[in-house]
Structures are given as C-alpha cells and as structure tokens.
Length: 318
Ligand code: F6P
Image (cartoon, helix red, strand yellow):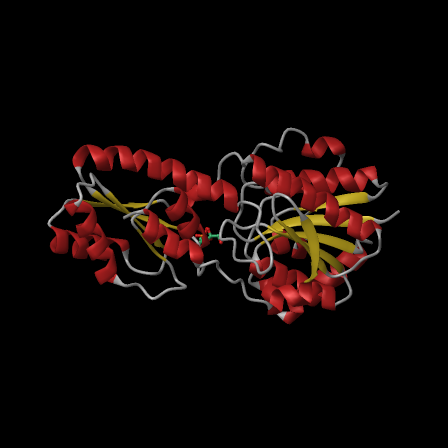
C-alpha cells in the first residue's frame, strides 16, 4: 500500500486545515495510507508522525491555523538535517510527502525531492509570495485587513484623522496592495517601490483640500517605520494621525470560501499527482483553476507583483 505523509511548515495560513483534510481524505479515497507530521520539518526530524483517518480531519475545514502545527526548523535548513529527514521517511516506508507552506517551506521540500523523496508542494502563506500561483491564506488575510480598515475608517471619519495601518507581507507588498485597493486607501507603501513620502503628503493635503474626512495610508511591514511616518505626516499636515499595526491578527481566523476552495482543490490534486506517479511538483492556481509547476522552477522563480494595482490605488482615491 502506498504510504504518504503531509505536513504544514512556516507561518500558519488560514485554509491549511482545509488542505490537510483534502489530502487525508483523498489519500484514503485512493486506498493509500496517510501520516500527519506534527510541527513541520522539525517534527519530521523528531519523528512526530501519526496515522491519520477520515475522522482525524473532521470538523476542521472552517478553522484557521493548522491542526498539525507548524515550525521554522533551523536543523532542517542544513544538508545533514535534510539527509536525516529523507532517511527517516525511508525508514517509515513513506515515499511521498505533501508539503503545505510558503516559499521557504517549498524550498525545503525541493531539497528533499533531490534526495529521492517524492515531494508535492501546496502554496500556503498570507504573504502570497510564492511564484506562479496564488497562495492559500492570502484571501483570508486580505479580508481580515479590510475588516480592520472598515472599523478604522469609522473612527478616522468621526475625528477627521489620518490613519497609518501597517500590514504583514515579509518582503512582498501583495497584502498591502490588495487591501489598499479594496479598502480605498489614499496611499500604499510596498517593498517593490521606493517610498515617496512627498507624494504621500501631497495626496493627504489634496484630500484635505477637497473636504475628505480622513486618509488611510497602508504600509507593508519593513518598508518604513510606521511611527516615524506618523510624525512626518503630522508635522507636514498639522492633522491628527494614528498608527495601527495589525500584526498577527492577519494570520488566524476562519478561512474565506476562496481559501477553502483553493485548499480543497489543491489538496485533492496533490494526491492525484502522487497516485499517478508524478514527482517533484507544486500544485498552483487560484479560485478558478489548478495547474502544476516543477518545484525546481518554483524555487528558481521570482514572484512578479502586479503593480497596476499600485497606480489604481492612487487614481481611485483622488
Ligand atoms: O510569512 C508570514 C508572516 O506572517 C510574515 O508576513 C511575517 O513577516 C512573518 O510571518 C512573521 O513571522 P513570525 O510569526 O515568526 O513572527
């Protein structure tokens, strides 16, 4: 009987549970034996593997986080850690591994596939920074940010204030751009574009002149210190400015329909690929389609952020 394992790795993302459920149930449906690895690659190195049944994944499709838990393993980053993981999988009689995670996790998966393990990757990270695909968790995170922007708009309007809202994304501006466009922000600061503070200030002043009751500035983490930005804006505009750093509330919460559909489709497809004997692939796609890309191509690729959204944010908030 074919034996496979599934793990989640890196930062948790809403929809990971729906993906685990799809992998486990599709594997059982296909007559395979399936193990869940606790705590990602670190758990693999500690042999934290448990047999999964259809019931192990009951009642999780709507839950954020990951029932398998996750980690960022230093040991697994080393060649000896990767060799140990491959040897352990061999000892357990596990020939295929489904890795659910972001860019770093898929890189780790690719290293294992070079050592003979059949690794199939599923992109899952709120950052949406995996090349050639949308990632599970991104849609939920954007909607969480939008919920926060809606609330902050209420208070911003009531006081006539400016709000600087810092969002996550590591080195990628996808959350900031999507939330900025869908949230009607005045300006968005992202790592892909050098910040132009003069432009930000001018935009706020223009808004004040035409009677706007508030301004929303979205800053991706690491691009510009939000508290410093507040000081600069206050002294340039003479308007009350507040800062909200959304932080980890962007990571959890019940996954959106889009994330659950992507997770279910990608999880099922990952098992189909294993069943068909295909190797070393990532399942990519979005809400409407699913396709495969060699893991080798994914780790060598760069995500190209759609910067047309950046221009639209400015154009639509005049
Ligand atoms: O990769 C997901 C992410 O939430 C990034 O957006 C953020 O930079 C990072 O993880 C935070 O990591 P940690 O949860 O380890 O603080």
